[in-house]
Image (cartoon, rainbow, N blue to C red; front, top):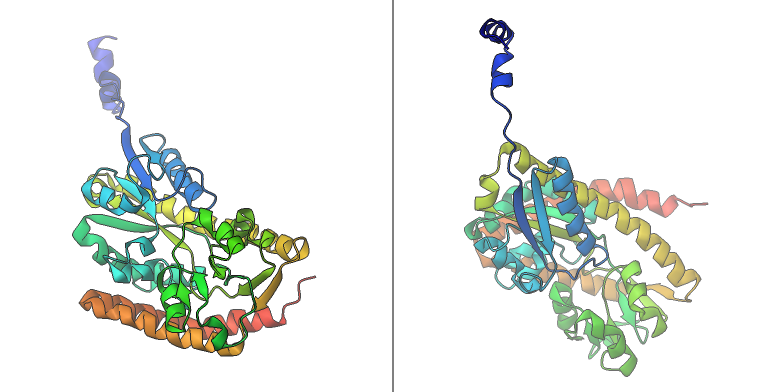
Length: 356
């Protein structure tokens, strides 16, 4: 091209683009440590979908490699790994950090608390996200909702529970706040890993156990040991999981990639709600219609005691400090605000709906 031609193109703003070839942007490579086994249905798959969505939405500019529990750090150390920058991202449940951050459970689930869509509403509209950010800020961790496995079943029992006396001495596998509620009502909470639950029921080591929702419980084989299952899952009515991001790494990203991470997590939360509802509905049909499981509702006396005791246990979380108290107050205010509308729009409707 002649000098005159180049000057002519410059008049149209083209010479610079022709003279300076675009430089390929380096791919940003991150690691995600999770608290789940590889490809675990529900949360394990949710973590992988977040990684895949980030790569897709960024056009390959950013890739996140997933390390399941034990692959980079043990599942119990995910929070610390993200805080230290060993992994730029993590995927777990806020309930796992209850020992060090008691108020963290509000960002997962508490007994008789939010349903999944109500929890998402509090996070997005009721100030929950800002409080969550403040809770994790001292650890240089930025949290996002990263999926939702829905509610849970109440538990599998070897014998019926009809009165509060039937709970006394009952050996029940129910961790967390639900276990504390049961303890205050006279039961004996037992801590066992998931793989040992069905054998423990079969051998008589425990009298009752809860795990997750119908799909996971059926896959575990609870229905082969007992045909007696109780509802509702008062102890965990919501199944929010969390995506954790190292704050320094996050702040170092351009605005569009930060937005992509947030969008990928929001997408997964919606996906998790719909997927868990769809799969659990089919599994519930199979448990009752094919496996002969009797789904019972906790008797009124027991339900009332569980609810009142849960109120006391959850209120106790407000004693950890000013921020814990602020989180608790925000949670209960939002619950009260949403309850009237949920009652009018959902409970009354569901009582009158008759699917064909």
